[in-house]
Length: 244
Ligand code: GLN
Picture 1 (tube, helix red, strand yellow):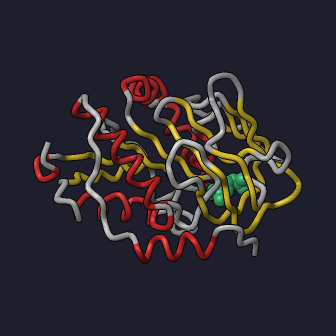
Picture 2 (cartoon, helix red, strand yellow; picture 1 turned 180 degrees about the vertical axis):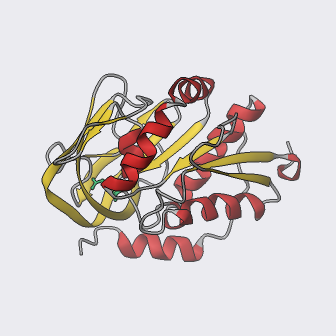
């Protein structure tokens, strides 16, 4: 199919509350990487009390515990629908606080447990130490084997069952600073602690998410045409292995 005949819908979940450390940059990267190829993008901002409908990509950013609290109860109302969307192959990307709410629960340090929507077989409990700094993670599902980003969280996330790590930490802490895992994936649901924002400096991963979303929508694998990623890769490579 010609890229100019393609269209993709992106639902941004609760950006007025969960949009920490430039996470909006992930939406901009997805939009631009589609538009530069002539692919039409329909962007929907989903706020508290809004309905959520069928979309190709759902994005939820990070936030402090208080914002997570405000979002958790609202997000839970859509658990069944979003689970069905996951099982239909919609792509989800959750960053940090949003990632934590895609698991079973997030237990803050001194507050009530926040119910997650269990798109991932994972749970998070707040630790005493805050993990802050650059992260390099080794991945095995793309030809470029690294993801880079910035972490700032006290939550410790643990994975189970069919939910596998996004990658293995080579610099930084990742999910919990113990098992060397970073992020999570189940079906087309991706969670990660990598803020920064993630996708502008990991163009290979951005294109991978777009291709998965197009496959879900059009029922066939669609290889995106290449873009000139010189600047993006210069940034990526400057961060590989960088700690602080
Ligand atoms: N409040 C969560 C934590 O501290 C998530 C923070 C974030 O989204 N950066 O772990």
